[in-house]
Structures are given as structure tokens and as C-alpha cells.
Image (cartoon, rainbow, N blue to C red; front, side, top):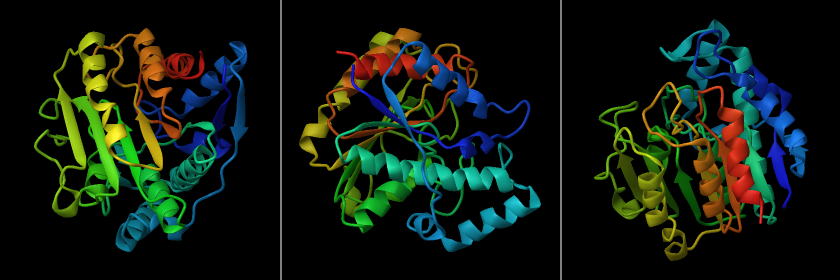
Length: 301
């Protein structure tokens, strides 16, 4: 079994929206315990805090200033996305974690960031539990530093990542592929098959909406239809937004994948040589088990 590098900082535990909110920061601790219990080879990588300069590679200065102000006031970006000083600090570490994940991926290591894939954060606004679009910032930083030229994103969160779509919509150097529940039935109400990019980026944004009730067979068929695209688009790194809110018991959506389905998904991504995994949405109490199921397919022979 190969070793997995787990990007994690104790500050991640501050990314918590309070009692009754679907996003629970406590997902990380039971997952790390399961890695030990099942003797999965792993190393913890502790990220540094991202800088404002990093954030501004994607987000506007007005947006960053707004987030800082709301954090001081303990306000909210939207009804579902409160902000306070602890959440804001955790967000900076999440971005730092995704930068670290991509850098280690370029070394040929298998890497998973336990707070990443915050794909609802757009250029100048956000909601959906997301503050900064960590993986978009990481891609932009590595491009700026000359470490990569092109990147590919596979987003399998049940919700369409409208923020990531907006950021790269006219960019032919980042190919974004998203499998998600039909946006006419689920937040954020966008991510349609007709949205294919614009200008130089036309054809580099692919949405695959799936109907509520989609099960394992249909889901894997859809995934298998887009995996070969990686061979047609030259890239230096692949980002996987590993949303496990496609699970049949997830309270926020209606895709019906089983726990063992994630092992099969992991097997499919095993062939990617340079893949950074971002632990995104997942709101059932089974979320740590679903991450573990993915790793069993991703790491085991």
C-alpha cells in the first residue's frame, strides 16, 4: 500500500459554523483515528498560513476587505455562511494547505488536504459554507511561480462549484469538469451542461448534471465517460474536489451512492500520477468512513 500525505493543521478545527449547522469541523479527528486503526501508511503535513497576496490571486481586494470586516463583526457572507475571526484564520490555513498539497503532488506524492475544495467561493462573493476558493488560489499561485502551466479539475461534489466555474470560465489553461446533482433541484442553481466556458476558455468547462436518485451504476458510467479527457488535455497537475455528499444518507442532496462506491471512485483516480485530493462536502456522520473508503481504492494494489 502506498503512503498518503495528509495536509492538516489544528486551525482547521476552527472552520466551524456552530451547533446545528451542516458543516462540522469534527470530521477530521475520527478520520485520522481510522488511518491509525487500519494501519494506512500516512504522514501529516502541517501547512503554513496563506498570505493576502495569495488570496488576491483569485479574489478581489474589495471582497477580501469585506470578509475581514464581516469576521471582525461576526457577520455572515450569506444566510448559511457566517464568518468570525476563527473561521477566517482557518480559511487562510485551508488555502495554505491546498498550496502545500499541490506542491507535494508535483513531487509525485499522493496528497489529501482535509480542508479544501471550497468551490462555492467566487471572485467577489461567496456562500455555501465557503470563504476562499483554496484550490483555485493554489493553481494560480503555482502558475505565477512558474511551477505549472496547465491544470485539470475533477469536481465530484454533489453541488456544482459555481465559484470555480466563474474563476476559470474564460481560461484555456484550466480544464474544469464537474459531476453534480441537477442544479434545477439543488443549490447553487447553476452548473448546466450548456455552460461550456467563454472566449478562449470555451470548451474547457464541462458540467455533467445528474438527476436526483442517481445510483452507483449510472454515476460511475458518467465518471468513466469524462476520465479519458485527461489524456486529451495536457496538464501538469490534477485537482480532485472529493465531495462525498453524493452518499445516500447525506442530508443535503439526493444522489444515492453507497459507502463502497467511494472505493471504486478511488480506484479510478489511482492511475493519475499527479493528483491533489481536496476533502470537500460531506454532511453525514459517515463522512470519515467515506474518505477512508476512497483511500482504500486509491492506495491499495
